[in-house]
Image (spheres, rainbow, N blue to C red):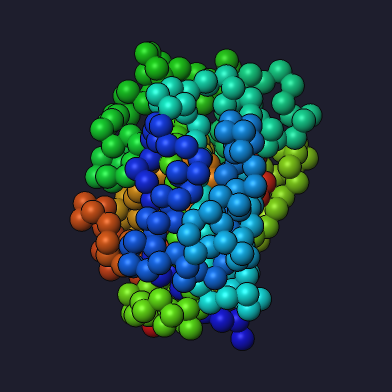
Length: 402
């Protein structure tokens, strides 16, 4: 029998701009911050994994595990760096879980971050577009200035054409998420609100990203600095930490699967790996989609908000956008999806995103999010974190510990 794994603590920065923080500072703050949530010394941690997607290309920093080992008490322990594009955070969590299951310890920490802006908070959009493009297949980069917005503009066009969905339906996803972010103190776009009319009107910052394709600025997630960290433990680990199991959330199901990197030649609207990972996580947890009333899904673009609702089983194939427009994804709907604001409004610090999804979902189940965002009687949660062109999928199912 597989040992149960529990979330003992979660901590994150406000998403947006980390300004003058160096990468060593970010790593240290993440570790110290999450340990501070339960008042333990970092030395109590047995294992660790850390991830960032642009540490080489934007930060000129490798061997992130060595930075973790610089935190007093962590030197000489099993620590690894992971990278799985935008699923890096989710992969870091799985990496820690696997270490614990292998008997390398009873308590572990997963850390994710991204520093995409300079010390003044400014960004080089063209450079960021180029380096994020490295996570696509070389054959699908040619002729694309901003590679991933272009790829997902194609996905959006395909989704609309195949399923008969209008632009307005996908724009409503962004409007809903900006509305949620207003109440999330950690959200990048907390102070920005948009109407459906604004999300649809082509003026000012809102423009079509690729000529002839439907993706608009408001359909896109944010370029974001931020970090997040999660302490996970076995039952023995919880005793070691002095954290009552009743205060914890169990990661009851988890799985990872990878589709081919190249988008061409596969059903991008029904990615096999994503469905495989989600179904395995449900099976491991002994739960089904109808049991879930909290979810955090990887809406790097609004079309993924629709596809994600289908992957987690809350909407039938092709009905994901409708799930949102009917209000079923609202805080008071059938399943509160991306009550954090999602990547579109909460922010998307690539390496931290998967950890932040699990962390927020856990806080929902603990009743610890702002009251305006709290799902009533939150009973179980699903998360769906992707990397690349719906390529790497990390899925989890959470429930309160019993």
